[in-house]
Image (cartoon, rainbow, N blue to C red; front, side, top):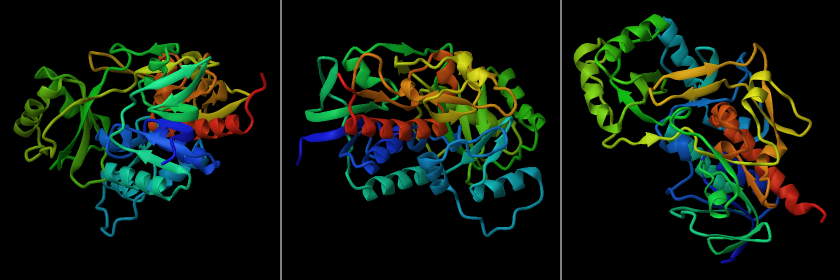
Length: 383
């Protein structure tokens, strides 16, 4: 087996998958490393069932290429069942057909985590030049004269850090920024089966959340699922509080009498972590102003979404019809010549990453990082 590759991608979530496939399609021998048993990352393993950041505020795709390709691969076929009347049922039918659904002021795509993992596996296995290594944590990174030369004993030409926590950058002491629990507090995400209550309005949701708040439970959020009589729950409390929460719902809230979760263990899912300082640091001001760049490689219209340790979400929305762009310079490290990054590790401040961290944007920046890395190898900068 060869111990040299053109490009090493660390992390096989949405960004890493997009980066690895795009780099390999550009003709580069590519290695994808992840400590999990398969590709998927947050999208495939956290319990999330909505893919955010794909669309503008009219529900139209913002990015083509790999981001749209993968989103369309996740789309479900129409259900043979005729949906019953009502807004919730119409929305369920849209989910089953893979259409975007509106959630407040934003549009999302519902998907099944097992489909996310399966589509990722199919892409990896069918892409020439791409080899994946599972159960393969990042163990060593060697840098010489401002360039990374080896990753886990493989000689490499370029590295793309899609680890979510800037793990490559940490091992080579590259400069990073970081979020914390005041802006990106983690959440426990889990499916809740057996829910027969319908949510057709904000008032319907409030009728459930208010009793929970009065009982002293931290805030939670219900999101749509493709499975009938199932909700996805984002809970900002401790993992050990999930069982008491479910017991309270069963005993006190109509439509939850028979609810249960198939999960046996619960763990918090981080929303963001460390961002590598690049040749340009995307700012929250850039995001909210809908700034455009001459070297733009991706677009996003997701609001600045910050979650405090109190479990309260704080949203700052872009102007109607606006989107911002992410420059290529935000995908390339400032002080390590051959280090690129995408997804949650892209060069952004705490406010900007609160928008750009969502999976739709991770797919777009991952694909761009893979293409930029391939271009770098094919036409390295002159000294």
